[in-house]
Length: 396
Image 1 (cartoon, rainbow, N blue to C red):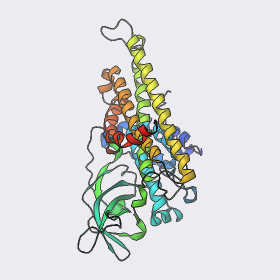
Image 2 (tube, rainbow, N blue to C red):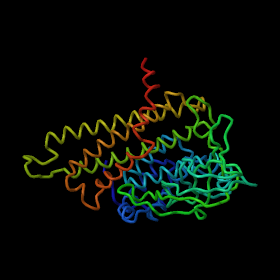
Image 3 (spheres, helix red, strand yellow):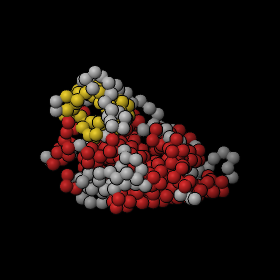
Image 4 (cartoon, rainbow, N blue to C red):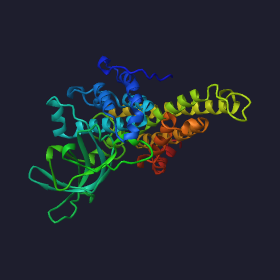
């Protein structure tokens, strides 16, 4: 499981295997990871390597020039990239999933691909702004919208807005719920606040952004209600729904962080002599026991996570929907990965000793990145409560 630091020219990459492409550029990403963390932004060399390998567009339909890979393959890519650098894995995850979903649902964005362009999207789905329908589109106003992960590489930005009537009142659907639309706009016409200053995932470019009285053409908007269907309801496209496809990407990233932490601590303790130890740390029985347990945690949670995801993918191909239990297990498995990853990374940080706290330190960065990843709203402990009933029922 060694990680080489030899730089590889991305111009030599010709493989159609996107996991292999990720492995080929991992040394480039790793070589610039400390630079990205210090600057709080993705380095140009990193963005260039990801673009040249085609990773931003790997999920996009091949007829649009994308790779058309299955979501589980994309997860393996996120895992490989995050092992090289957590921030880069996170930013790629956010951008690749956003670009994929945007290419599926926005006619205007899809046309960009048909015209031979390779746009990259980022943004969030929380309806924090408002819009009024006007001729040809919508006029949009938002507060600063937080967490635009992947902004450094993106050239299109999006969010979801609530539609207001001419009097400023919310427009309601037939079921009484607010009418919302997802929107996309060029980054060049978006206010970027540059306010991302955090302890971990520092180079993800997760800035706040927004628009003031900005016109968005109708073809760059989409009724967001079908994007998050209820469990068991059919939806457009033989793939995972928006929520599921967005959530699982987080799991791929923290699997990469676990890999890196285990790799680092195994090398740090090799032959390491410490005060009060009668043998080198890697020969100490307590360390060996805990490492083997951490290894088992990694492989078991990884296998369960991928099994749940792949069962969901197979189901959507057949029925264009997920059952109540399948949606619950996707949320459960992704949150559980984060719980286990926190345990494994903290195990590695403890046995890494002072090598964990020195800068630059791959293990120290993995610890900081893991804390930020674990605190994401989509991985909150409430997801387990929400998933509990159908999973409990499955055992009756």
